[in-house]
Image (cartoon, chains in turn green, brown):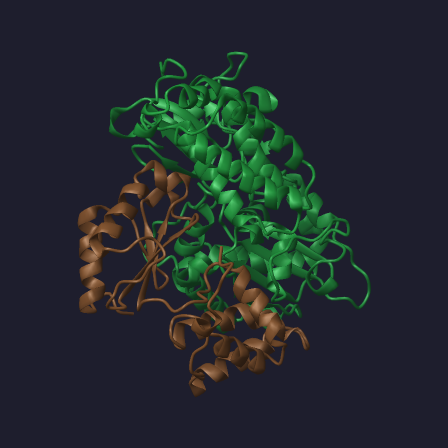
Length: 447
Length: 178
C-alpha cells in the first residue's frame, strides 16, 4: 500500500506557513476553482461523493452533515471550525494549524462558500494561544491577497473569518458546548434536538466541523470527490492524521492512508518504529482516551484472527467486546511496565475534572468512579469495588445530555473487561500495589 | 474545591487597560454581529489576565463587564467555569504541568515531584519570593511531546530534570521573558 498524503504533503517545505510559499505550492487553487466554476451545491455533492467522515471522533459523514443545514430566507448561516482539540492522546489539529495554517484557512473559505456562510469562526482552545496568533497572521495575509473580505476574487462572494479562543474546558469540544462558549457563556452542552444545523450559533443554522475535516475539503475540491474516495479502504476513504503517543520509539503526527495495518503503523519504519526502549506492547487506546482500551492480543489482530487495520470498520470490529474505535486518531500505546489500573484512574480523574456539572449522573458518577479507582490503585479497595464501578457505569451511560458521560464510562468498562485480574491483584496485593509496576500479571505479553 | 473562599483575597486594586488594548477590545466587539459582543468575553478575560496582574480579581472582572456592557455575573460565571482563569493571586510565572494519561505514561509524575522538591512547594502553592506557582492541568494537546508544561502560553516539551533546572533558571534570570 502506498502512503498517499493529501494534507501534509507540503508540510516540510520551508516557509509553507506564509501565503506566498503556500500558494506557490498549489495553495488556494481550491478557492479559485470553487468560486469560478462550481456552485455551492456542487461542492456539497463532491464532499458527499468523497465519503469524508468527520475527523473529530464521531466519524459522521461530512457531506450528509452539510446537507442537513437549514436554509431559511433572510437568516444568516454559520460555519464553525472546532479546533478545541483536547481529547487526551490527540494533537493532530495542532500540528496541522501550526505547520500549514493556510490549508485550514483555504478549507474554511471553500466550505463557507459551499454552505452559504458569510461569517465563519475558528474556535481554538485557549492553551493554543500561539497558534491563534499563527492563524490570525495567515488570515490577515488572506485578506490582504483578496481571498477574504468583500467580493472575493471578483466572485461577488463575501466572507469574514474570525478566530476565537476557549478558556480551558474539554467539554467545549462537544459542538453545542462549543457554540455556547462562542457566544461568551459557560460551556454547558445543549439538549438536542434542535441540532445546530437548525438552531446553532445565536439560534441560526450552523455547521460545526473538525479542523482536519475542513482541511480535507481542499483536496476534495481540487481533485474531485471520486479521486478522494479512491484513497483508503471501503467506507474509510481518504487519509487520516494519527497522533501517536505513549511508549513509542517515534511518537508524533502521521498522515496515513486508511487501510494500513495496525502492526505496520506501530512497528513500521515509516511510522512509529515499535515500542520505546525495546519493551513490549501491553495495550493500546487507538482513538483518544474515550475509546475502549485493547489488550496487546487484540491490537494487531481482531478476535477472529484477521489483521487489524487502521480503518473505522476494522478498529471497531468486535464491538465493545473485543474492538475499539478510530475516534479522533489519538493513538496511545502502553508498554509492559504500565499499570492499567493507574491509567484508568488517571483518565477517570480527567473526566471528573472536565464534567461540566450539568447532569447529575455525569457530575456525581465521574467523581465516584475517580474515588473508587483511586482507592483500588492505592491498595485500599476491595473486590466489590470492581463491580461497583460497573454499576456506576450503567447509571451514567446514556443518561446524560452530551456524550462526556459515555466517554467517561467506556474506558473504565473496557479496562475491567480486559484487565480484571489486574484490578483484583490490586486488592489481593495491597502493599505491592503501591510499587506501581505489575505490567505482566494480566496476560503473557508475546508481541 | 474552593468551598470556603476568603473573599477578601479575591479583591485587588482596580487596574485598567492601555489605550491600545482598549482599541483591541472595541475591535473584538465589532467582529461579531450587532448585539452579540458578549462573544468577546473569553478573549478579553485572557487579555485582562495577561495585562492586569496575571489573575482575575473581582475588580478586574467588574471592569471587563463594564467594557463589554454586560452584567458582572455574566463575567463571573464564565471566569469560574474555565480553568485557564486564575481567581486567586498567582506567582509571576505559573508553571502548568500536564498530568493526564499520555504524559503520565512518559513520566509526568516524576517531573511534578521534581519541581515540587526543587521549588519547595506543593502543587497549587506559590514560592515565597512570589516567582512561581505550580499547577497541574489536564491534557494540553502535546501528548507526543511529553512530559510537558506550559508557562505564559509557551510550551516546554520533552521535560527532563535537567531541562526543568534550565527553564526555572531561565525564568529567574529573565531569559524566557516574553
